[in-house]
Image (tube, rainbow, N blue to C red; front, side):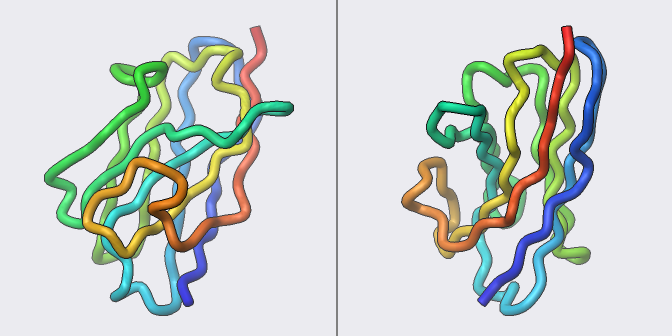
Length: 123
């Protein structure tokens, strides 16, 4: 099993920045691709960003491209999401996910999930 713990969420104003972190523990050798998803109240969980094991490939949802940056430090078993120019529509619970696949961009390709961290952006 792999445990994922997110941190870094909070309440910010529109235009501000936040950096989310996700620390993996347990059988981390089984982890390849990692990603971030988010779920707003009353909506389905949606893809935000993904990164391959060696960080050679990254993928972003159209709504965050150019504002968010995903990165990882495999030596620290940590995944990051730098979020700039935040908008009220970015308000959601953000989830970290890990996959056995080299690259994964859909929910059903991920094997492990964190508990989520709340991000609230006020206008």
